[in-house]
Length: 87
Image (cartoon, rainbow, N blue to C red; front, side, top):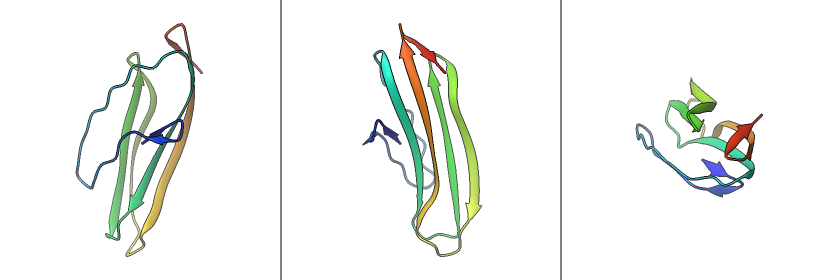
């Protein structure tokens, strides 16, 4: 998981983590990327909430044989003004 190009969170297969960050007013780019390490299957699952409102909900999975590399990537742009997200 990247915020404005900076990696802020990474996990391994089957790991689950929660991450909280206070965001000041401004523009944000969230990028979620899944890299397959060579297993037969992969799963991409994330939920991004800002002030309790879902910005992104992803629950994807697939099979890629022995392919190693990026299998999923998505980005979301968010503008926060006066502590509230604008779409």
